[in-house]
Length: 213
Image (cartoon, rainbow, N blue to C red; front, top):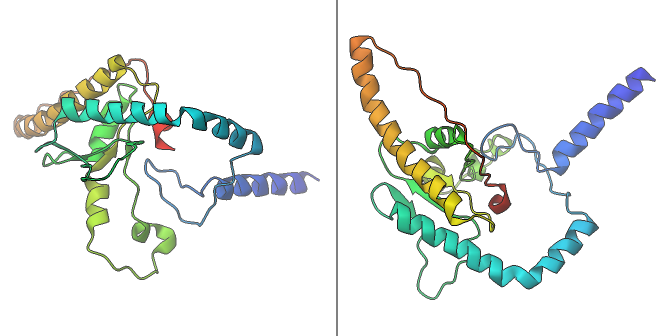
């Protein structure tokens, strides 16, 4: 009976893993197995249907969030945002940015912002780089790889206010500048054999999840 219970528990855990996209433990979406997304119950579907009446307001909020990021971070040599082509109306449901400063990677910035309880995530890992598809043929120009290596998903929830958006922008600016300055400083520190431990600041958290799904 004990063995049957242990086996049942493992089957349940495996079923949940496969039913929630079979996502491996990583900051980005990575898969060693093919999974599914069966989490939407009839109750959640009903709630979602009821929210459709507010869709225009949600889109307006998401576009406003994107405009705030682009205005306050700029769209040039350090940060690049996805343009909106003529004749196209984007809902801007999730704001993403490319980090163009040499030596500044999305993972370094993500971890630095995590110290401030601000959650960001990498862009989606390309399908041809997923372990589950390692033996599949690939045809492309590596553009998706470049975007994955440079891109970061920013908090984009509809409930974000100007205060929290300001915190995120300030964190991005200071962390990118700090990482660049720290990279140069470490060169000098190692030259003189000096090491300074980083400071950790704890503040109320901002999560990307409301705008990442």
